Image 1 (cartoon, rainbow, N blue to C red):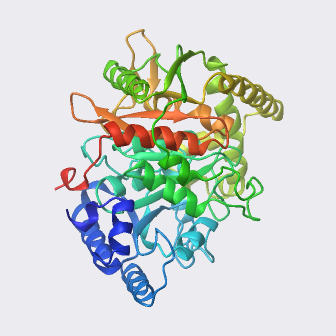
Image 2 (cartoon, one colour; image 1 turned 90 degrees about the horizontal axis):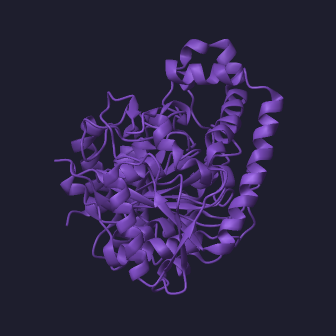
Length: 467
């Protein structure tokens, strides 16, 4: 196996056993970027020289007996909303042309302290306001969408152009591209990972989280990056989610109650996706979990609540630039930002009140079960020129609305949601299942995902994706 094909866990173990150096691993990833990025468009900035220097430092530190932890010497990418001192944070937008970050974001600073090696900044749908990331292409099939808005991060990991990556998730933007590229994506509990120094789309919905090749990889990143941050008003106290690594490594699922939605999550879903996810849920039962049918609450209000929160918050963030240089935004983002100016304060407050009711209703679901399992997205990656989905019942949805529909509830409520690959459709495109749990039960979704992965996981091998 070539170094760029290693998972984070495998790479970390090899580095600690001195079977591989950080320099060798980083060179392999950088060479992979050079070989494939023209086809998949994962990166907006590649930090070649700085990455090589950081890898050499990691090797020197380890030779001197200093071990910074499991991320020490492991190369990864950051979505280009996440500030790194001295590097541009473009948000893949002309509106950020020439912008250079003066300091590290909290997560970048923690990665630096953990000894991780930054190989570059990855493309996002402009200001994270979309679900396709048009600059990037799906790692399995470059004629199809990467997913968004963390599409560059997902494609980088899936193509072997990063061992791990961080993204952001406001309505599914970590989980959607992870699912479409056959990866693991974790949206943690709201406030568990700090967001200071991260460009906002919608402050009450935004989350930072990892995109990786395995569930344990995601748990390693969560454990390294979680913790309070004075710069993020939503930041949670230390230890809020407990020992996530211990949860991820817990054996078996006996005693775990898994909720299977009777409505919404299996409505307007591609038959191949439904079949694969239902089969995966059945396998959770085979691993000892108790399967319980549940009715998810307030489903018909999800779209209205999500848009009622996101649209005015995004417009408020961009207010000055939108008025001074509206032409600096792409047409799709500009129209959404302008629409936000039409949302009244009363409508925004009603959306906040509805969110409170939705959180309470979901809390009732988690009195019945520990985890809810469902499709991550209703269909696999669509062709890049497809803009709408025509369902058999006559419903027509935009591609973005379809992709966000099943993931948005976790953003509104702040509950953790993990996606992992559970199969492929007839075209060979990955299918994802998401596992959701009550806020701060991140260890529980990691436990369930890790158990499934250990028994039945479909591992995405970068070398098999892009030649």
